[in-house]
Length: 214
Ligand SMILES: O=C(O)CCC(=O)C(=O)O
Ligand SMILES: [Fe+2]
Image (cartoon, rainbow, N blue to C red; front, side):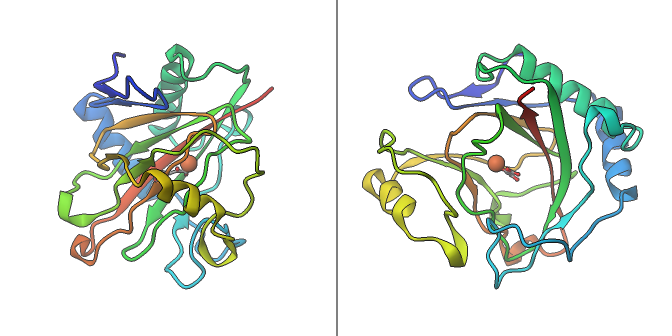
């Protein structure tokens, strides 16, 4: 599929809109509603300790499938897009995928998913408005300074990465538009804007997929 948007200057991500035909998209939304979600698992330090925690589905790997009818087809499509993209330029063997329901008031802290060969996120909710927040942000980062990235945001952050981000103070945002796939190169810095109270009861439903090195 041809990306509808990519960043020519800093080719760290690609956006593919209307990934699924309408009937398949509707089937994915139904499947997402039937999954089981865990809200009390181990704390993922990229989510603020004082913020509401996301509801997370079990992870799926090729060996564990089927996860659910509809979602397996989606994961296969995401995998095909990853295989076709030049962003995924280190070898990888499998895709790990899970569904996040991100509540109002929560945000995902900055990270690079560096232990994977690249990642992708697909927005499975049927509606999303600009006022509802939850944008995926790609800050422009100065070249790496050789410091190891540790826990980067939230209560355990030491502020180094935030200081680097502040040096440029600019970047790109991608709205969580329904039926949109974002492919992200390994190590490219990203985070999400907080979901706004104006989102009301609308779920921000993201299917996150990670290319697992073989
Ligand atoms: O939900 C999003 O927009 C991004 C998700 C993400 O970056 C991740 O799960 O690693
Ligand atoms: Fe990520």
